[in-house]
Length: 123
Image 1: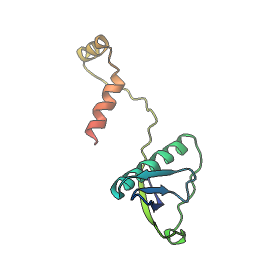
Image 2: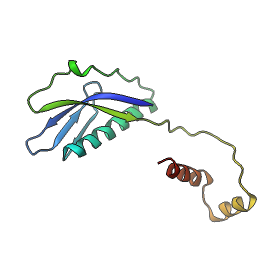
Image 3: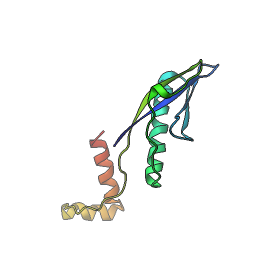
Image 4: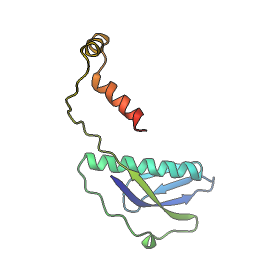
């Protein structure tokens, strides 16, 4: 699911950035450059939302960017988070017997191998 929230970027005296989200108390990050700050803002937003979904805490609606007040060295930018549902799902799969025997013998987790392979495939 996709979420978009406005973030306030404050330019610090040393050229770094502090990022806050007016609608998400406690969601704060920093970046050394603007590009790094954008990346960190997205990462912080994604983690914040994932935590609140996991804990079943309601998310506040995003404010209109025009309603957010900024000061001299601040600007507002919309940040997008693509949050994936990480809950485990049981599936029945079929593999050849020889593969199953090798998995058992090697001590591998078939679930972990499948997750790793699918994660690589979908990147």
